[in-house]
Image 1 (cartoon, one colour):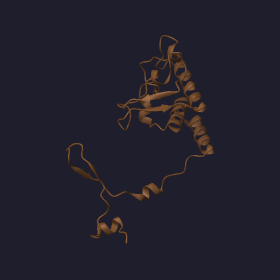
Image 2 (cartoon, one colour; image 1 turned 45 degrees about the horizontal axis):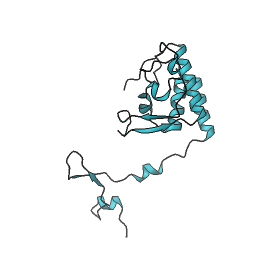
Image 3 (tube, one colour; image 1 turned 90 degrees about the vertical axis):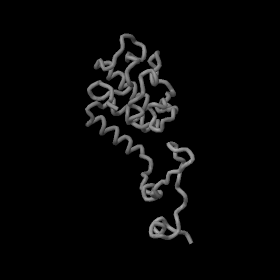
Length: 171
């Protein structure tokens, strides 16, 4: 007969070993709390096309910086990157000197939540269009604009995404 974690907590059989290596003290292990299967069961199904369109429409209607929020939304949706990781991307990582959107960028280890460098891919036409509209929006407002037409008119030293005031996000 199998024993649940609650039975184990009441003094029944012990739960399976959930210990991992302790990197601060080599040769030792750290116990993990029991897995919360209820959290896993609550995961939502993927967004439908109608839900995605509804969110995009709300961003267009109510956002203080609609082009930037749409670009962030579509980048999160199509690349799987987290907002913090996207906020750390620099212009040259996403936009080539020619002004074209790269097909692949790298989230550097220092910017990645996991601490491991990884690629993200720009395959979605909708996401690419959102980035281009956002770049046009930034250039029109002089937010991080460069002195040359390279990098679609943006200063390569700036982050790709800026806050509603045209400044880098405080991270």
